[in-house]
Length: 357
Ligand SMILES: Cc1cc2nc3c(=O)[nH]c(=O)nc-3n(C[C@H](O)[C@H](O)[C@H](O)COP(=O)(O)O)c2cc1C
Image 1 (cartoon, rainbow, N blue to C red):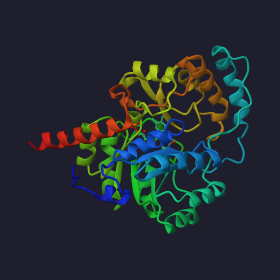
Image 2 (image 1 turned 180 degrees about the horizontal axis):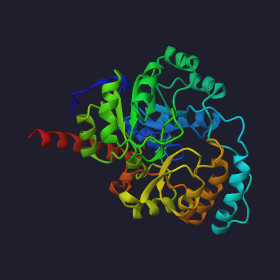
Image 3 (image 1 turned 135 degrees about the horizontal axis):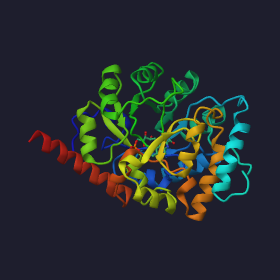
Image 4 (image 1 turned 120 degrees about the vertical axis):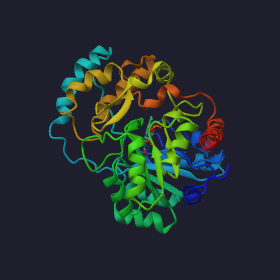
């Protein structure tokens, strides 16, 4: 398939204008490599990896892949103080832990890391071709250092203001992430979620910036990709669709919850980490709803909620797990990631041809 708008394909060195979203915890090296080998962009979500884990995951993906691999980090600033929020969260989490059948809240390390000097050095050594960020961009020095060695920089915008800001700070392409998207919203210029759907956001971002725009949020098949291209996007980033693939790391209880979920069964919640993320509504999301306005700063809450996710995955019980997924969850298909990329490319071509005819 020859795509009319080749700006993203040329920028990233890929055949199909499709990016498998970097999903921290779920996007494995085998997934990223399978996608890359099928001609799209495979990504690793590195936000919860130690330096050693990052090195190992990137080396594994690189060894398996013939094409480029994107590595993704969170660009938030680590909070210095919690304003007593963690103690208050412990109090309201106690009955939720009890409901889940757990006797106490175990001490848990903070795994979500902010992009800082400890990871910049190893990242420069690894020399990835593409680096993407969520929650803004890191320091101008870090961006300069990465660009100096030829890395392409991507980041997520949830409004036109964020898109302009990212472009001004050196992003080579902007991911326009709509309200439908699964996982964390990349919103960073405000604490409140941006409630703009992909269909509305994408053309506005296309008009606001010169760099190529990547549409994300609710895109689950070739019809969605064709629609995004018609809106002026140069490509798409898809998360939930790739969560279904064989190569994604998804606990069986979570897969089962995804299988049961319909388009209306997800919601945006701050209950997992303190920042808005879209997940399948379960008992945990409901129990956290009254506390949304009194949470410790991102990402501190994660250390208190992750044990519930792990316990649920171990017990095969999804009620208190973090079931991050987007509104397109019900549309998705199981199978290999390479097969999904091939199907998506063929479907997109057919959808574009069908409209023109
Ligand atoms: C399970 C899950 C985890 C995610 N983790 C990340 C992440 O680590 N970094 C990131 O930039 N985006 C992350 N996202 C958001 C995706 O990049 C993308 O915006 C989103 O998946 C697009 O919407 P869709 O799920 O409807 O395809 C995640 C999404 C999901 C579903």
